[in-house]
Each structure stands twice: as C-alpha cells, then as structure tokens.
Amino acid sequence: MNAFKILIILSICSTIILSQQIRYIDEVFDDVNIIEDVVYANSPDLPFIFLFEWNTYDIDLDMDIYEPQGDTISNRPAIIFIHSGSFFSGNNNNDDVVDLSILAAKRGYVAVNINYRLGLNILSSSSGERAVYRGVQDASAVIRYLREYHSDLNIDPNNIFIWGSSAGAFIGFHLAFSEDDERPESTYGNTFDPDLGCINCEGNDYNHESKPNGLVSCWGAIKDLNWIDYDNDIPTIMFHGTSDIVVPHDSGFPFTINIALPFVYGSSLIQQRLNDLNIENQLIIENDAPHEYWGSINGNWIDGPNDNFYAIQDSSFNFLYNILNSYLLGDLNQDLSIDVLDVIILVNSILGPGSNIQYDLNSDGIVNILDVIEIINLVLID
Image 1 (cartoon, one colour):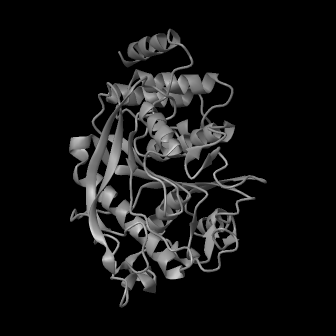
Image 2 (cartoon, rainbow, N blue to C red):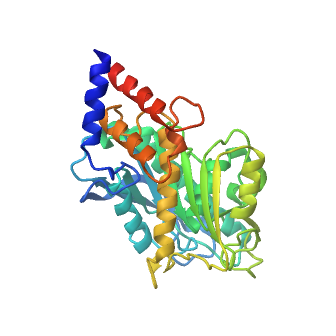
C-alpha cells in the first residue's frame, strides 16, 4: 500500500513545473498588506537640538507591519528592519528599508519596519555610546512586543530576525552580542545625563527574551569584540565595502577622522571573532565599495537600487532560509507542513544544476533518490 502511495506522489511530482517557487526565498505572494504606525513602546526622547539630556520627553515609538496578502500560515517568521542615518536622521520611510520590507513580505515573512530614538552629538564619545544604547533598548522593546503579541500577529516567536543598515546594523550587533553588565559607563548618566537603565528596562513592560534569532548586518560595527561570546550563538551574515569611510570594515573611528566618537570594530574583525567561537556566520566583502554600496545615501536611493542591492537581498534571504530550514526536517518550503510540495522542491533540487546540501535528509553527504524516499516516508507518516 505504501509503495502504491509513493508511486502516486512521484507521478504528481512529475506533472508539476520544475521551477516550483520556495517560500522565504522566492516572491510567492503578489501583494502586501501594510499596517502603519503601530505603537510598540514609549520612551524618553531628545529634542532635535540638545546640549545635555536632562530635557528629554516621552514619545511613542512606532512601526509599520508588512504582511503577505492572502497568507494562511499562522506561525510566520519575522524580520525587523532598522534604518540608517548615523543616529541623527532617517526613519522607517527610508527607501531601502521600505523596499526590503515589501520584498520580505512577498516571500512570506512578516516585515516589521521600525522607528527608533535619534539624537547624537558627533563631537562626544559618550553621546555616541548613549545613542547606540538607546537604539538597542528600542530594538529590545520591539522584539519583546512581537513575542508578547505573536498570536495576534501570526508570528513565530522563535524566529524573529534583525536586518540593519549602518546605524541599524550597529543596533543589531549590540543587541545580539552585548549584555547589561557590559553597558558603557556613559549610559549610567551624570549630572546632566540621566541613567538610561538596563537594555530591557525601556519602552514596555513585556517580559520576554530580547535577543534576535538571526542577524543581517549591512555595513555595521561593534564597540567591543569581547562582547561576542559563547552565550550569544546568533547566526549572522554581514556585508561591507573595503572603501567604506563611514564605518570601517576592519577597525577605526566612524567617519574615518572623527576621533571624538567611539573606536569600533567592523565586519571583517567581527567575522574573525565569530569564527573563533564557531558561531555560524557569512561575510561578503566588496572590494573598493563605499558605504551603503547598494545605491543609497542615508537610506534613500541615489543610484539604486543597483545590482548589489539584489545580490545582498538574495544572499540574506538564503542565509535566513537555512536557519529556518534547520527546525523541521523535511519542511523544505517552511509552510509548517511536510507534504507533496516539499517532495517537489527536493526533486527539483536533484534534477537542477546543483543540489542543495541542506536537503540531505538521511545525512549521507549526498542529495539523491534516497532523500526522496526519506521525505516521502515523512509525508506518509504526517
């Protein structure tokens, strides 16, 4: 009886076009629904022009939520997009993060495009540290909000990723790899600057883990490589240009000559640290490429989106897909069900120009007909 079912499944597979699209890699939805201005936190913010931080005032922090139109899955991964702008400009209407949010939602993700607190004195090291830290607190707040309301938003609370550009990537790195006992001394405040509190102490009172499950960094950096340790096993993909004069790909000061801001470590040295700790990562270095080399300045398209933008998004979505694919053996299209569509994807991979080693279901080092039999057995069991 099982052999007869196998023949039927293989017969169905042979009648379907080999270019079957894969959720979370390909654009499987045509349209996107956008819910704008959802408040996720309330925190003390700075006026646009400030000398000291004693005159903060509370503001609501909001986000736009992009969802695939017509999606029926109730447990979807989410990507939080965090815009660039050097901590004194930009918002979630920046061209690049809006386009990425739409592209992510069309692939089946819930895309969350956030605003966070801005305010930086570029002549003050402590102001730079505090600006990053406030952003980290805001990213923590949005992750805790999503995990609190994951059922209402149809989000998988165990698959929430951060994708940051420039300042947004700084926030992603520091949230993923730093802890409360590593916060800079400047964040504790003084006569003129209030104590910013712990990482999870601002925005809202939701008590959830605030670390992301994966990180995409576009031209970001971190203040201290030693903050990355064995306890922060967060898969990370990084992109950086070797001619970036805003954020160094190796190490140095932001904006190259601004010694008033904190010294930072870029993607090349971060990868070395991640490799030393055997934390899953990927680094794509673009020789002679500048800051935001996908064609934007402070997040707005100037000569982009260019080919680099599409290459970066493809590499990133493939990286995140491999994280997702490790959770449920056989669920190749990540629709939370092992069925004939997964069989089709596996057959397509075998018949295509290069099989995906991630589909080695029987762990023999080869993707072949034995893996097809393995997944068919999973379909029959399911």
